[in-house]
Length: 251
Image 1 (cartoon, rainbow, N blue to C red):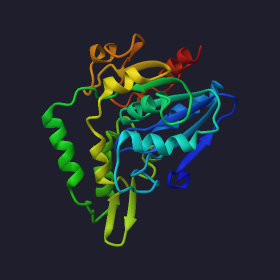
Image 2: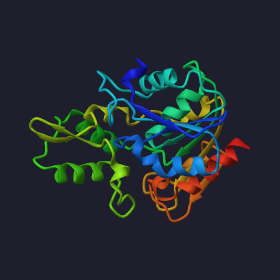
Image 3: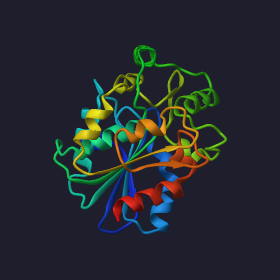
Image 4: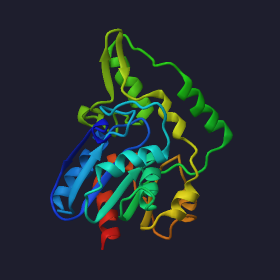
C-alpha cells in the first residue's frame, strides 16, 4: 500500500523528479539536490524512504521488483516522470523505466550503481541480511554505525539533516531504522535492467567512487559522466552537478 512508503515532496511544475536513495540511507540524502531543483525550477520532486529504510515500513521480503511495485503506486499520477537514483536507487529506477510496473518514465539518471558483484561481496551482503538487529546503548553509537553503513561521513555530511530518520529509539536502546534484510537486494542483474529500460538512460559516478568504474558504466549507456571531486555519494557532495546532469537528460 502507498501509505507504507514515507515520502516528502516539493518544487512545482509539470515535470516530476523521483529521487531514490541507496541501500542503507534515507531520502534525507537528497536535501542538496532538492534545493538545486527548486532554485533552477526543474520541476516537482518526490523523495521517498524505500521500504525497510527510514520511516517506511519493513516488509517480509525485499527485491528490486518489490520496491518498484511500491514506488509505481506513489508516482502513478505523475506527468513527465524522470528519476535520479543513487546506487540501489538506480536499479529501482531502471526497473520502473521498463514499463512493467504501469508507469511511463522519460529518463533515468543512475548515480554510482555497483555493477559487478564478486562472490565475496555477495557473501558479505548475505551475512549482513541474516544478522539480528543491532542495538546500541547510546544514540551517538547508533549514529556512528549509521554513518558507516550509509557512507555519510562527517566530511561530506556534517549537518544532521542529511542523516534524518536513519536511527530510531526503541525500548532497549537505539538502532538503525534500516531492516537488515534489505541487503538481500544486492546482486540484481544490472545489465538486464539497463537493457530493458524504455527511457533515456544516463549514468554517472563520482571521480573517486570505489564502487564502480567509468568503463563499467559505459558498457550500459552511451551517456556517462564523472562528477569531479566526488566519491560514492556524489549526490550529497556535488548536488548542483547532479541536477545539471539531469537537465541534460530532460533537454
